Each structure stands twice: as C-alpha cells, then as structure tokens.
Length: 163
Image 1 (cartoon, rainbow, N blue to C red):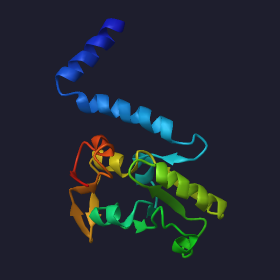
Image 2 (image 1 turned 90 degrees about the horizontal axis):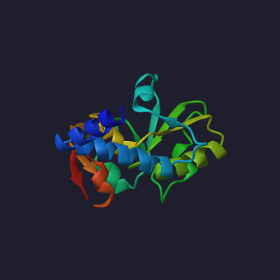
Image 3 (image 1 turned 135 degrees about the vertical axis):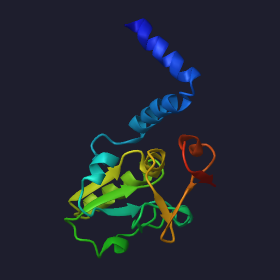
C-alpha cells in the first residue's frame, strides 16, 4: 500500500501534478493561518445558501480588479462598523480576502458587534478562482485577479494575475 501511495505521488508530479502538490501545500498554509475557533465555510456550503451577503475585506485596489459577484467592499485597514450598519445582524455573512487571514480578523470584529452568522470563506478568493468560480469587475466577468504580491501570487493557479 505504501508503494502505491509513493507511485501515485510520483506519477502525479510527473504528469503536471504540481497543482495537486501546491493544493496540499495551500491546505497546510491555511491550517496555520486560521483560528480553529472561527467558523469557516466551503465553496460548496456557500452555494447551498440562500442569498448570503459577501463582504470583501481586501484593500480597494484589490476589489476593483475583481471580486465575487455582488460582494460589498468593506476593506481591512480602513474597516469601520459603519460600513455594515445597514446589514441585519441575523443575515448570513461570508467574508473573504486573498486567503482568509484578513477576513477572519474582520469577522471577529463583526461577531463582537453582535452579528450572529459570520463565516470566513475557506481559502479566500484565491481558492474561489482556483476552483473555477467567476469573479467580476464593474459588473462583468473577468479573468483578472489581484494576487496581492508575487510571493502570495504563487497560490493562484487560475486567472490572470494582477499586482
């Protein structure tokens, strides 16, 4: 059995399995980034929800390049609770940033402010794009995605990277 696993890994790497290996590395990275006590939500779970509110916690220049459809920009460095005062505290809110670190921090602020159903999108917008989900700019689909910087951009395997 051990031989089969090694052979499968080696074959995958030879056949362009670098994406698979990167995915494993990405999962490991995310495990170290997330607070185990803050709720994560997968893309599959999001797709089952009825009208979740998406909040983009990246900086505005990142949001302008592309974002999840209908996402509201709230920012990170400039985040203020006034930006969400129009939201019902019982709505399902899905936060995201590039990978999920910034969005988790904003999510904790929302929880402290009394929001009851706040989730961090697993893997952030990078994972969203890597899974083939669409992103938008000015109401139109785009292939462009802000990769934050060249170091973090390695985690984007699909889309057109913008820095």
